Structure formats: C-alpha cells, structure tokens
Length: 239
Ligand code: MN
Image (cartoon, rainbow, N blue to C red; front, side, top):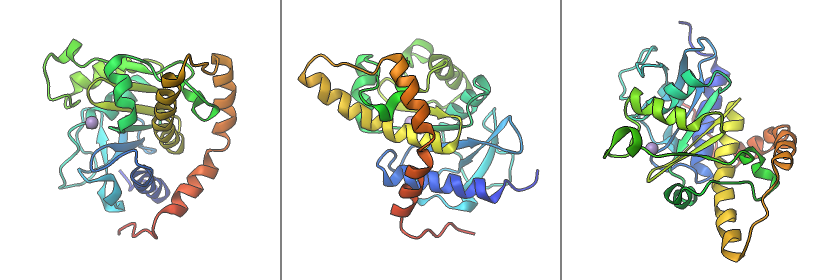
C-alpha cells in the first residue's frame, strides 16, 4: 500500500490533540478514521496518549485488529471497537472512544442521552446502551477482542452514540470532524441533561427538531474545527 494521504494523517493527529484539549480523552481514549485507500482498514494511533500522538504514530489496521502498515509499536487494546463498528456500519467513516466523565452516570443507570439543545441534535434517536456482561460475563470492562467488538457494534445499531456501562462511550460520524464534534457535544449534553433533570421535567428536542438542527449544524462543524485547532499550541506534528 502507498502511504496514506498526508492531509488525512494530519487531520487524525489534530483530532487526537483536539479531543485531549477539549477534555474528552485523557491518557486513554482513541480516535480513528476509515483508511481512504482501503475500505476494510482504518487509521489509528499506536498505543499513545492522544495528546502526544504524532504523524509517525498512525498505523493502518485491518478488521481483525492486525497492523497492515509497518510498525513496531504496540497497538491499543481496544482497537476492536473501531474494527467491528467499521465492519458493521459502512456509513461510518470515523469513530471516537472515550471515558469522558459526564456520560458515565447515564451508562450506569441505563438512562439514554437525549438532546437538550440544538448542538446535540445528533442524539435525536437517543443514545444506545451496551451491557458487557450480556456477552462477556465478568471482564476487565475493555473491548479487547473481536467478539466483544461485535457485541458493542450490535448494541450501537444505527445510533450515533453508544454508552458503555461501567466504562465510557463511543460515537461515530460520517467524517472525522463530525465524529470529533459529536464526542465533544455528547459530553456537553450529558452535563446539561444532568443539570436539567435535577431541576425538573425536561423537554428534549423532538426527533424532527433534532434532525433539522443536526443537519444545520453539520454545515458549521468546520468553524468549530478551525477554532479547536487554533487553541492548540503550535504543533510539532512529527516527521
Ligand atoms: Mn475504553
């Protein structure tokens, strides 16, 4: 395979840094994009904290989780999240997995995230819920096999976001920018939804309001993306 397009690699490095800067990921969590050269592969960093990812860390993996580009670096244990979602959802071009804290109480209580404001219209169908015990029994909670990845992808179904009980969440998008946007606003929505539920009965966006606002906001994501990049210190994107 030829090298992946440098602009896609740079976007993925930026996506990693943005998610760290926005507080969605910390030392853990990861973001991937479908390999533009090969629909049954995806680009993901090697086992590196997202805030430290450089160009040379980006590896192409197949759906079995094996590296198909040259690397001697360890992979993320949970690369099967990405592999099995890309396999199950041809419409998905990017995936973000995180442990962003505000979604955890929703995952624990099986309470779906629903859109409290227009920025999170992508949650219009509600978030999906994943219970790892149903397929894995007692585990370390990580999606560390194709089998568990398949169970997660099945729970995600056609949704944009799946909450993983006792663990975190995974969001998908039709572009890297959209998936990053959704990861940022899933966390924001969780905070606001929790605040609203503490005050009283919440009026969420209707499914149609959610669909319309999501569609309008999709045309504006570039504006946020440019701002998020500007906030980062000048990047040494690596060699
Ligand atoms: Mn995880």
